[in-house]
Image (cartoon, rainbow, N blue to C red; front, top):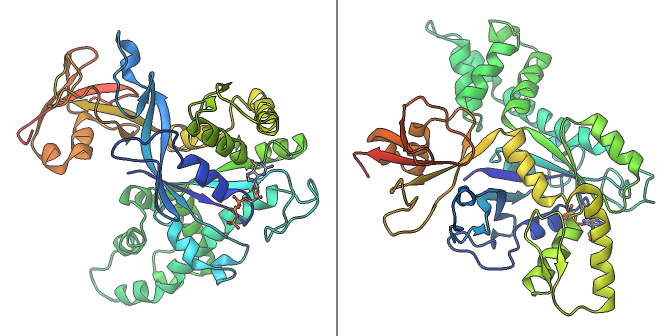
Length: 393
Ligand SMILES: Nc1nc2c(ncn2[C@@H]2O[C@H](COP(=O)(O)OP(=O)(O)OP(=O)(O)O)[C@@H](O)[C@H]2O)c(=O)[nH]1
């Protein structure tokens, strides 16, 4: 399962975001929105379900009237502080947890109401742009530290006659969780000395920064947007590639109210409707959230996850089925599964995502929307429904 990590300094709102994003108003099937352990849970990205193209909604447990929720792992990596790569605060423990993530949401207190250590200060007095830079910096230097600690071994290997620097670096970097694809791209784009003995700290750091940017991309969640000065949000937009304004507290309140049956709201909706009895205070609280949602097109929590996975990581959703006309599996379940795949993935990649045996026995595939056979190197797209024919099926 694709893994999204929440990082950021203390008190930025990570736990609130995490609690909101892993809370469901109903229990859903195999992937309840419940927490796996205190810092690792299941959340969802939202997309249009292919059943919208049909007369009836599919009724899948992760589809709500055509809004499809696709499971992702969510990690809450608490308490990162400046200097963590040198062991400050809880130090490397958190950075190590981040190494399992495919994409990172840097939760920033956009209100400027907490300082670098996460201690409360007057709202607007701290510059949240500092928090954008520090998470990136900590991760870059943490990776540079790993490269540096392992350098002696690369130097030792270089004495062997059939030594290849590229192979040694690939071994080292894939060993710490980077994909071969990212490592190859980094080695192509960064200039470095051919002899490991000639490398200095700067060479190691350049390599680490490039690889970090490829293998651990970071989006910024401008949290506490409900109380953030407009100027802070503008500055954050200038400082980072992708910034999503959000109110984690607002999303948590809405999901709790939805769970209690007091509002009609699905995660990612731009608005909600009050449907149950609420105290005057509760109603005032929810109306305040409505004001923020009107401005940003929702609370931003679902948008942040969707942006991280679909836009920033450039993934899409594909739906394998066994019956190409009914879009069902062997048990008559309609659109039973949804898989997140990287842009450029083919039917064979989908087959491997379903099961390695299905991938190995791959024969051909059928586009169930168009009802036609598709080639092995056909690039799948968002919402594709695919029947895979395999010797293993
Ligand atoms: N105004 C406002 N406050 C928020 C929002 N999200 C979180 N908070 C508040 O910010 C404070 C810190 O939130 P947490 O979720 O505990 O922060 P954290 O980043 O997990 O902190 P650590 O666990 O210390 O790493 C709490 O008082 C929250 O209620 C928001 O969207 N708006």
